[in-house]
Amino acid sequence: MSLTSTTTTTTPSGETTRTTPSGKPIPPRQRKIALLGSRSVGKSSLAVQFVDEHFVESYYPTIEHTFSKTVQLNGRLFNLEILDTAGHDEFTILDSRQAIGLDGWALVYSINSRTSFDMVSIIRDKILGFIGAEHVPMVLIANKTDLESQRQISTEEGQSLAQEWKCGFAEASARSGENVMSSFLLALIEVEKELNPDEASTLASGASAANPKQPSNPDKNRAGTGTTTTTAAAAAAGGDKNSKCLIC
Image (tube, rainbow, N blue to C red; front, side):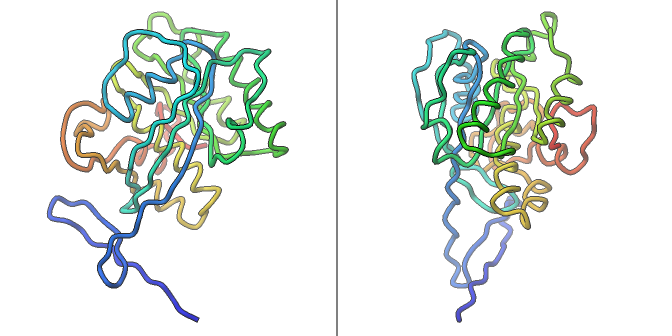
């Protein structure tokens, strides 16, 4: 029987990487999640902000599109593939591609739309029914925090629903970039809690993004260079009920 070991090294910039005993970098783990929610809640805008770090002003109804980005959690690289889907309503039939072959789900609503908040529960029920499971790796994302004056769903109400579902919760703004990276890292952490439970707590406490264009300000996810630590780490480790980004 052969045993495989890994080595964790720290670069001069403070980044950690995992390598084999021979010094070769360990390839990224492949993970795939789907973005689901009502029309116009900003699913595509969140995906574009996460991958390309800019806001898409115009709205074009999405049919289906896939994004990908390499991120880092506690020195381990992940290639995160995001399936951006068309908007759902109560009559939408769940496509098998939105349920099969996925590692996790991100359900999105807008803080200024009660209808979209009600819809995420319907979508979740469809996912669980399609798969035949009582629980799946999932994160609930409340988008459009830049529209605070129009808010219809309080932070506490979103947190309460996520706690009921036993999933991650984050409030974000695709327009400003606030908490966008953290939201997707939370989705990834939820996946790892399911697939690699022994590593999940370590990954959460060391959450960081391996993206040379990722912002240096973790709270705003705006301009900067190098590997940056995001609010996902603090939220996951601390569990502050007042945080807008936490794991339930």
